[in-house]
Amino acid sequence: MPNPTAGSGHVSRPLTNISIAYIQKQENFISTKVFPLIKSGKQGNRYFIYNRGDFYRDEAQLRAPATETDGAGYRLTTDTFFCDVYGIHKDVDDQIRANADQPIQMDRDATIFVTQLMMLRREIDWAANFFIPAVWGTTMTGVAAGPVGNQFVGWNQAAALPIQDVQNQIQTVEGLTGFSPNTLVLSPDTFYWVKNNADIIDRIKYTQRGVTTTDVLASLFEVDTVLIARGVRNDAAEGAAEATGYIMTDGALLCYSNPNPSLMAPSAGYSFTWSGFIGSGPDGQRIKKFRMENLSADRVEGEIVFDHKRVDAQLGVFFTNTIV
Image 1 (tube, rainbow, N blue to C red):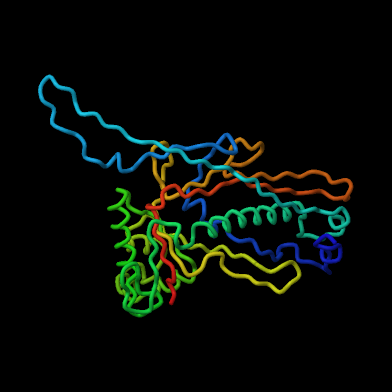
Image 2: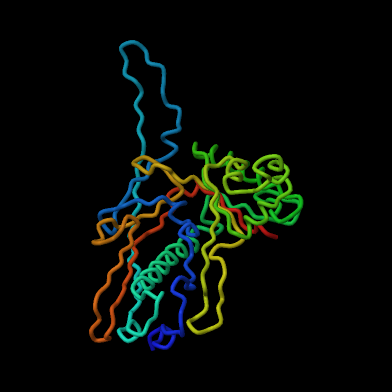
């Protein structure tokens, strides 16, 4: 049975200036802010990877008169990407459309609904593959007390020092790669404990009215951007009791996100999108509306094409068990 049904599209004396929907803000989805978008005219292709060590090796030598300079070179490898196509549709039945009251606008609502599900799919894919331990060059693990090695005091503990923890890892990444991490992604629960951390509150109590915003945190952590991954998903089947929660929890990702993607420009990762996909927008989405006469309905169909790729594991540090 199609949803909504004819009955649920009609209510007695509806208000025309208010309706209730659950549309997440676009800024809640952060994947393509962490992995900058790269457009490709083809669905799949190769990209070059320069050997970092060759660029940092000291090989310039003194040159004697009438002699050649010493030669050097750099190695190239390649990796591939392939932008999978994900799709979803919502049918607008003729009977439901005819019986719907204002302010219900069936085509608009179907378009918003489909767009939301496409954004959700892209965010969930990124989180499942990159907001996790063990895929980055360094994994830091939170403990209640007495950290050793790659451990830190969990950021919900009174003795936690998140600024020091992050800045230590900024130095580690910079020393390994020559690039300073510029992006910090926090899960919402981690953000709550960070913004209420005693050390952070003490540093800002005489500025900005003592309010811990993401801009203030970026300044304290010495990164360009702090992102809060506020995207929410429901894991329950249709009709079952909701099982809604944040897509990303109990973690933080510190990484270098290239602000100007280009040739010979490293980044922790890139999100490839197929710009040659006919009718797609700048970030690989397209919406179509067409008649399904056999269903006596109009179909609003959405497709999104992407491939998230980690480019350099050493440009990222994952903090797991931020809450212990």
